[in-house]
Each structure stands twice: as structure tokens, then as C-alpha cells.
Image (cartoon, rainbow, N blue to C red; front, top):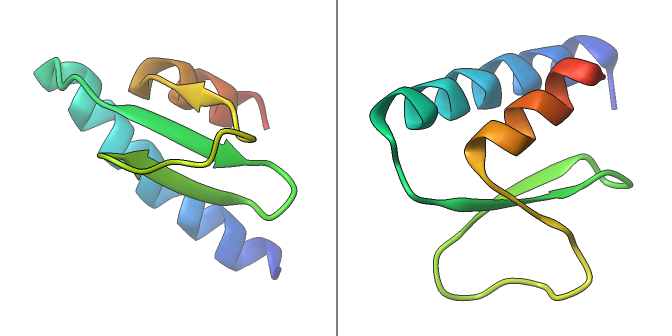
Length: 64
């Protein structure tokens, strides 16, 4: 993936996560580090991926 696209994607997801944290939204996320894909969990999710709260995923992305 082009690093410019990746950074744009991260900026967008970071904005979403920050808004969810500020609003106290109760949601869970998965982050497939191999394919760099994010999924907000509603009903279905893949048991092979770790689950993150918005704050956890925000912290993880800021480490990258």
C-alpha cells in the first residue's frame, strides 16, 4: 500500500476514534495488522483478530 494512502487512512480512522472516545461511544474494533484493515464490530467479527476499544486502537495507531 502506498504510504501516502496509508497515512490518509490512519488520519481518517484516528479522527473517528477520537470522536468516539470524546463522546464515550461503546464500540469495539479489530485491526488486522497484516492487511492494515480496521473493522468496527457490530454483530459479526473474526475470532482470529484482536479486539480493541476506540482508545486502545487510537493508542496502537499512534505508536505506528
